[in-house]
Image (cartoon, rainbow, N blue to C red; front, side, top):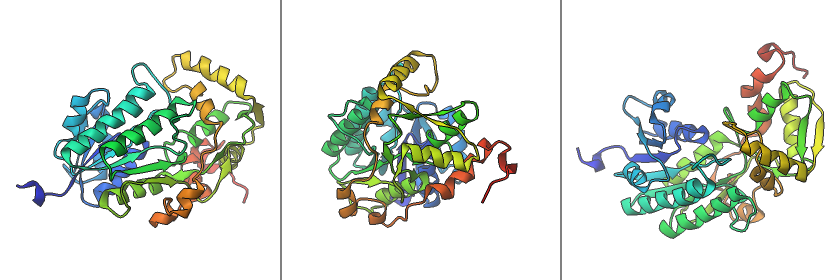
Amino acid sequence: MEKSNQPKLVTVFGGSGFLGRHIVRLLAKKGFRIRVACRRPDLAGHLQPLGNVGQITAIQANLRYRDSVDRAVMDADYVINCVGILFESGRNTFDAVQAFGAKAIAEAAKKQGAKLVHISAIGADKNSEADYARTKAIAEEAVLNAVKDAVIIRPSIIFGPEDGFFNKFADMSRLAPALPLIGGGHTKFQPVYVSDVAEAVVKGVVGDIEGGKIYELGGPEVLSFKQCLETMLRVISRSRPLVYLPWSIASLIGSVASLMPFIDPPLTADQVELLKSDNVVSDAAKSEGRDLAGIGITPTAVETILPTYLVHFRPSGQYTKVNS
């Protein structure tokens, strides 16, 4: 059967992760064939129920090795890169994964003639002191140099089931006598729902939004770090004091935690550096229609979704009496 007579093929790098699985689900509903490129295909079985038999396949790929990237992109009509790391571990450094890896994917997509959607982050800045933000900006530049009409999406912090923000602090609140307000808790966020981000990505694939541009995605509310914690505590029906943690002490804790054998360190010095800058949609993006509203997506509020997946952090789970 000729390729033109088959459903279009999308290669999704990082498709087994938090955002990736939501993207895969939407692509499957639209009838695409999906190739999920990840380091451990044997751990991607949870994606199979999202599509029909044979619609979703997993392939081994490591962004540090260009040959595996080229193999994953072979014959693809579209490529999505949603790989990102929040902390470095061994050879998985920000430069290797977020800079070199993104460039390798973009060059492979260009060689294949595939359309590319790249997930970056609000705050990407080549001059940032945070390696996470610096490498995100380097990646954006490499992507647009290779694929001029690539769609770049910059979300604020993403919330939803399995997120690494609200879940982390909700879990911490079960045992910790207090929660830290890093730098006073004044940093502003615009939490965006994972399904809204996934919908924007799929719009980029099907051509509903213009390529060659950077889109910034945020939810309907701008919340300070302190307000995020207060909202989370209210949802899980717990009361914990919020204690001011100076930048210097937070950086020290982050540096020490990075040296400990954590699978997921509670805090790193790089994350502390990121918290020194607000993480919200820019006025330019809003005025130019490069935000959720501008691409026809109604942003979902935090408090409408948090109770659906944080309920198990309540003192008695779903049986906790909630004051209305």
